Structures are given as C-alpha cells and as structure tokens.
Picture 1: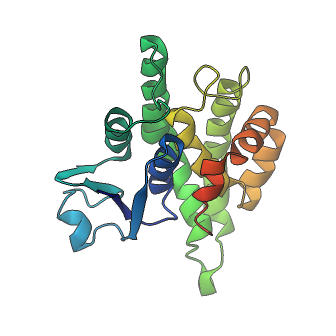
Picture 2 (picture 1 turned 180 degrees about the vertical axis):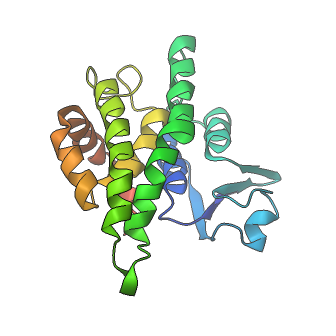
Length: 205
C-alpha cells in the first residue's frame, strides 16, 4: 500500500517529512491539502499539516511520521543508531520546532504574505523582526561549524527540519544578506541543497 501524505508542498514541515521519505526511499503520494480543512481536522484536532495515512495507520506531527517511517520501512536509517546521537537529533529537531521556527515565522510570513497597501512589504514590521532572525542564524551558524551537520557527520532529521527554513530565508532580502554573511550556514546549505532528496522536494517543481 502506498503511503499518503496530506499537506501543502510549500509548508516547511511537509517538506521536512518529504525529505525523510525521499532519504528512506519510501514511495508516497502527496495529496495537496490546506491546513484546518475538514480533511485535516478529521485526523489532527489542531488542524496542522502534514498528516500521514498508511493503511489503517494515521499520524499527525512531522516527527512522529518520521519515526514511524524509519521503524516500518526498509532503507537507510534516519535516526542514528547511537543513543546519544539519536537523542541529539531529537534535541535539535525539537529546538528548531519549538525555538527557532517561532522566531523566524513572523519574518517569513511578513515577506511571503505582506499586509501593506497593494500587497507591499511593510518596512517597519520587517525591521522589527530582523533582530530575531539574526539571533537565530548566529546560533545555527555556530551549530554547524564543525561538520556541516547538526548532529555528527550524517544528514539526520534535524537537518531535514532546518534546510526548508533556510531555503525560504535565502529568498527574502534581509535574511539573504545575513545568510551570505554566515560562512558556516552558507557552506552547510550549499552542501545539502545538492542532495537528490532536496531537489526532489522543491515546492516549485
């Protein structure tokens, strides 16, 4: 049976989940579904995407889907076998979800969905959010300084959470400048953007 993934291709968390599926080599079908629709609310009371269905198994939250995929399907391991590295992978994945993304999402939304007159960006809003982005990028730049990975020297779900966010930040003016000035993050992004899984999950494809 083919695994079904419900969500929007442009969602960073949908892309994270798709990266895991691609890296694991699991065939799947992406079913374009917006958050908070009846289809999503039927399986996720919070209305968020992605939602996965595999036979009788239905899961929401990207990390739970990734763990399920890693345990159920054959293919390269997504979570490291070493207990400490596995714990650090979950640590960074959780930190990106709980600490990094909330600091970035306002800036990303202000750029992707500007609320100024005639759909223009609002400079005052952007300027108020830039310091929060800069602070997070400084933390992440230090985190990938040694191995171009968040954990050890392998591409883990922690990296799968970060890469889609960096892809958007490279598009917006202020964050693009900040990323270009972050030598470690720039090198990190270029390295992993060359992965087949990252190209295959490009929402513009």
